[in-house]
Length: 458
Image 1 (tube, rainbow, N blue to C red):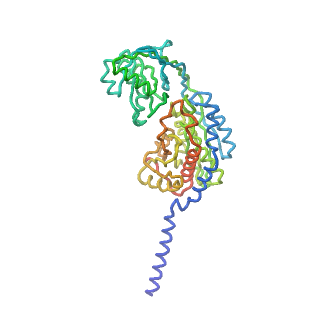
Image 2 (cartoon, rainbow, N blue to C red; image 1 turned 90 degrees about the vertical axis):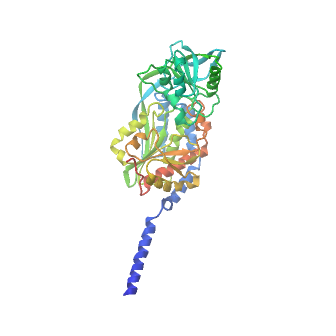
Image 3 (cartoon, helix red, strand yellow; image 1 turned 180 degrees about the vertical axis):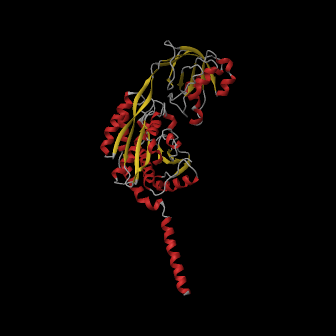
């Protein structure tokens, strides 16, 4: 009897051990072969690069409200339908429509010289004949306040060297409001970037309706330093500024969507993508054509390999991220009825250089699951998982509780070209685009197929 009992106990223990092993089967065990197939397929050709180059070369920059943006979207829809996705469609979005006009900045004293300039998105115009003023150079908002008595009737120059984008961009965004508080007639900002080849940087700026609105523009770091040196020597540089821009009524645009329906839980959705609009300089290849096209390529690879994710995989090209975020807001509103069924949202809007991994929202449990997922990115050396995630376009989804991720890349060169005329196709590398496509495809597919789910905002 004792021997039988021992045998029974041993049999039960062995069975429990086997069940425990099965329960502990890792995502790597389950998806290793699929991940490798995705990587291999991603590296087969340069379709992602070639498609992106065709769009950028044919249509150029894509500012909200422009014909080039809408023509780009028409072309994308036409080509997307050739890939055989289950659905390809657009959804309407009303977007701001600001148009750049004649711009010039001329130094009148101590010598005559024309400087490169880019009006910042949404800036008001100068009078038709422009305005003339002496430069007051400042290094910070505190420095501006300390020099308040000097500012009235002059042009404030924020010559603030780049540290991080988040820290330095405040002078582009809020500089006009702060300068106007002290009576400035216009404001200039050193372009937000770590280096320059005489390339001014544009981007969004804002006004406060309780404070007078003044023209606001960016100049190159080279000229910002030069004018600052003159100011420090008490040379009193005098500038003549002309900005002839126009704010038109909101225009019609569209979000672009394509999806593969889930085989078992089609109501549950993994959404991923980038923003299709760009600023009106360069080609918008890096910001954010690359983010859109690696997402498109990721979905195409899943389709071509015949993979059948349990949940729906949906690519979205959001419109109007640069100067309004209308696309991300419109998507969240249009899909409010199914937001609770969004199991993951992934964004790529930080360049498409060599991928390093993903940022992820949530607590340590979420990060642990994301790290388990990232093991499948080992063959492309993109396994970093760090807290963060989000992104402008998926922000409204994250606020509603959807877990978010953002692609991490080697971004040391990104802000050299960001929002400048240098954001062109030659800055991108076909191989690195393919690696980004593979990273996006693997992470989105895992989110759409694995038994576990990431958790969202509590």
